[in-house]
Image (tube, rainbow over all chains, first blue to last red; front, side, top):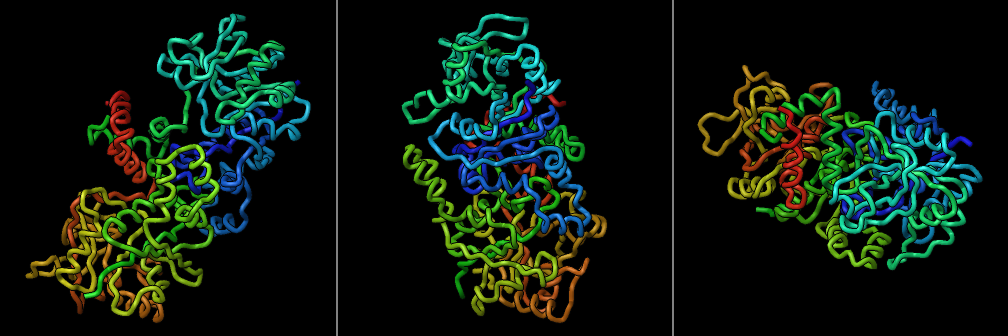
Length: 289
Length: 296
């Protein structure tokens, strides 16, 4: 069965960007002139997924507002002759059906997935985090979808990382299947270099089957009372084959920490047609690069 | 002389150059690292001794008002998780000053002096106040507002405006000041907008920090009521200052520190990079990242 739906959880508080995140969701952090989450939604649409479910929390109305029509504002822009500046958002609204679910329930990233059960129904679906995206050629979602269609098993995107990163990522214990596709045995959360089972990290892209839902209800909370998707995936891997697909030509853009956010902004502003070269010249002139 | 305790910040612009990011937030809410641009302005005013912050806004800017308000759910959660430092950052935003919001109505003309038409009810007769443009930031040890206040208290002029030496290729973008001959206190004759460098009377560009007395408000009202608008039919601060300077003392104070604007994407990006490099938490690593890009 084809994957037609994607869930984008966007309900966590962005503690690292406080106080900015007091009134704006971290998924709305701008990468030059577009919010992070728009890159994620665009990737879904470009990969053929037309139904997108954004799970948000009460403080994050701004995301819903952003992906909704605003006639008054559009009228104003038309008058000013600047309506083309929001074409990229209007285009997404035309091509995709975006549904919003208000998250309730305990903390942790399992909750938003469970919250979307009714909308997903009995079909496979994709999960992508709303505050990070992966630039890849072909796009990471396309790469993962083709593996899903070939093997008919749940697929997680993987990237090889350095030793330090093993402290911040879910690291995969796997058995080989093909050159770039592996069979998942278990994901270890933030194991650090000594305990890491491999250098293959699970990277925020999960193509799941609906049998994940009963497992999401079965998992136990962590000491902080949080419920984690990775625990349900580990249960799923015991019941059926789950694959980790190592992405080709990929680079992660993570707006989750201040440093990574700024690195992301730098990369994207250099790519910008209008300001890219000027920015390079400026940094060269100041001997900052 | 009356003490200066109020700062008026103009944040009623549309920020269309930042679209789509500004589709549902004012451009003054765009982040510089982890704070919205407008918070840097408020902090500068507060560090200069200002108590009341008057924000002149327009419809659709509720995220700005929420930013300087309590957020109970978030605060309770941070407290529960023992995130003290984060909680302090959240609470500081609404504790550091009194916030007053005034909406700029649609019946008013465009222009950087228009907010001055909206504040007569919150500024007392003969009360001097600070006026700030929401997109100018100043990096430096002594807050820019404080520097202007010091000059005001010393010279008791009708207005003090902040100026900075600006490169030739940039000067045409801004208002450049023409100093009065024979005065020692940087008194000016005029602010000249969009002058090519070859014809500019000085290299000092004026930017969005001012101390105004209500005399400026009266001129603004007169211009509005008699339909006396400037370029593009807008109400400009420079026009008000030029009329004021004919009769009164207007001082253009060179500022110690670095003025940076965030008014367009390129300059916003430059400001973002320079502020990030200055930060203790990420500056060193970010600088290393830039150097390793090997652009040259």
